[in-house]
Image 1 (cartoon, rainbow, N blue to C red):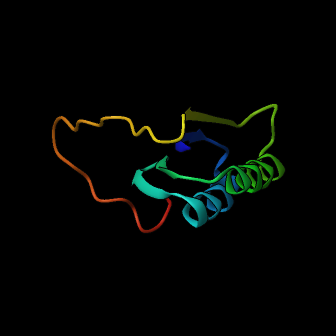
Image 2: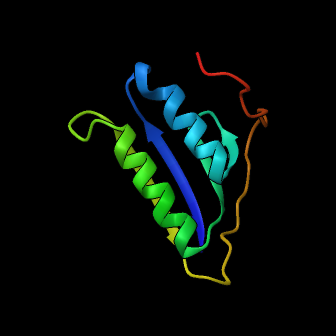
Amino acid sequence: MYVIVVYDTAVERNPVILRTCRRYLHHVQRSVFEGALSSAQYRRFQIAIETAIDPTYDSVLVYTFPPGTTPHRESWGTTQPAPSTIL
C-alpha cells in the first residue's frame, strides 16, 4: 500500500519519530513522509510510532492508498529539500 504520514509531536519526541519515519518512508517535507509499505512493514511502522508518541499530546496522521495505486502529487511554489536535521 502507498502511505503518506504527517506528524506533529512534542519537541523531545521529534527525533525519534523522524528516525522511525526515515527507516520506512521517503522524507518529502519537514514532517511529511511518503512511500510504499507491505502489510508487515506497515504493522511494524505503526507499532514503532505508537510506542514513541504520547497519545494525549502528539498527532500522527496516516493516509493509506490501496495496493497498486499511487496518489498524484503536485507541488506549487518553491520546492524545499527535505531537512537533514530537525530543529
